[in-house]
Image (cartoon, rainbow, N blue to C red):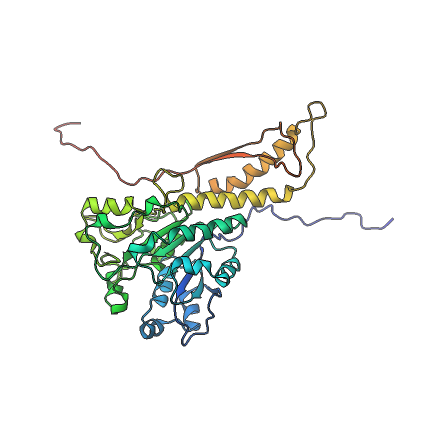
Length: 410
């Protein structure tokens, strides 16, 4: 016998620490020239701050020389989400969004960033009147990735304006008539940028939308006036606007076709939101510019009619898969009398699922959940174990209605 006496094994996990949040890792696909850069087309370039893009040759001079807004959009992303990660994928200059997502090398580039949750596509050839014709192909792109068990929360398209403004607003194509719950369209425009160069007059903001999504938790609406976790410089404030103090950024807002927010009636504003567009505006009597909402290109009655619905569902799916995969092809003990799955096995699976989803409760991302596994299941290579689950999502308050009157006593 040896003289080890006491052998102590080092355990891990007791401190309950977690890995960094990956909800703010996004992709920006930019139709752009590569002149003066060290970029490669259809290759993902990881950016942790705007200086990383500048080191690759994408700086303010690049935008000015090439009449593009790639540096501007990257800068906007990091302005609103300083802790985010953005992977820049340059794409060909003459493609529509549907053309971008059909390129095999682009698909490979997206595969190379498996942790990315949202994709923005900017500076393509498609303007708003034709954008509705693009969303079906982009949704198919998302669904093809889902078939590989890669869950993309949203693909955001730049809804560039045509030469003439669309009037009346009712003539905007109805994106809610499409069946693309993972696709959204931005027609928000910062007038301070649109007036810099004639090439920018019809641009729609993509970087600002991506940044404002990335800085929010998965259950927060893009249009929320305040957010749960503000960057350090904004802590202590009661809101988180697009407007940046000390600059002329987002002092006002336009639609990408040139219509100013001030010219939109309440019915116009509602029509744009009901038609599925993301735009920016202001509250009368309250300073700052904010996004209107987070609609997707599917009917409003759909459970996934808003970006946050998809972000919550996809995050839960990723957690559930990670929890259950270690149990795949594992032994399933049965009750010797009934032949059904043993209750202790059911309890173990439920316990694992509950522990995993409890993280979303702790992070204030969902209101509740439940799982049910029917023990009366006969399992085989061709018959999967069925688990039924429900997630209670948080509600979003879009407006307040207050009844207020005068009185001579209470």
